[in-house]
Image 1 (cartoon, helix red, strand yellow):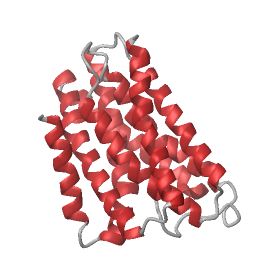
Image 2 (cartoon, rainbow, N blue to C red; image 1 turned 30 degrees about the vertical axis):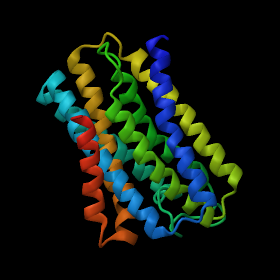
Image 3 (cartoon, helix red, strand yellow; image 1 turned 45 degrees about the vertical axis):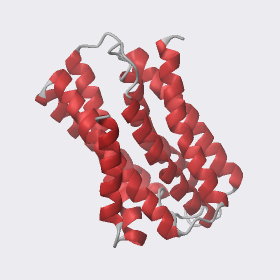
Image 4 (cartoon, rainbow, N blue to C red; image 1 turned 180 degrees about the vertical axis):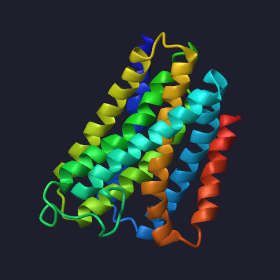
Length: 249
């Protein structure tokens, strides 16, 4: 199997967790405290992957300067795009409660939420594809971390969309499309970055890491803290340690 198709398959697998979470969040009526707890676990998993897989890997590959510049650039790009989307109603796209506006309350918010979901998912998939460029197997830790974090993201967001009155057709079309885009983004990460100098690859990896870290603190941690604040620290550390153990297995 060509490596570009492997990249797409791994990206699609990780992205499919969003759809799994969306099905649970839309149909299962999961208690908000449970959603918040799972979100805390997913945040811990991603924090570990960003630290020990992405940032550490970028530093080893290209040194401190490309890593620092890339991470700062990723955080800046994510924050700038997120500010624009927040003004259109996508500020609380990962929230499971009543924070998401309906289309009647804020016209265009549904489209902004869709774009915001893409903004959250694409950097992760690009990194999955780029991890194959070294000629070895895919970074399984990154795939597992993204998968485990995508389930609570999809669950929480879909629960909030249901409460905001969005239809099942909208919710599942959105998350199916994003799962497919995740596969395409992984292919792009592999094909477009092939042959790039180590410093460039390090910068791109760090760019994605910075965007992911900004996403965690802006969307996942607030949702976790709101309804599970007494346990959120413990659950987050548990997720962090699970991903850490996987990276050293």
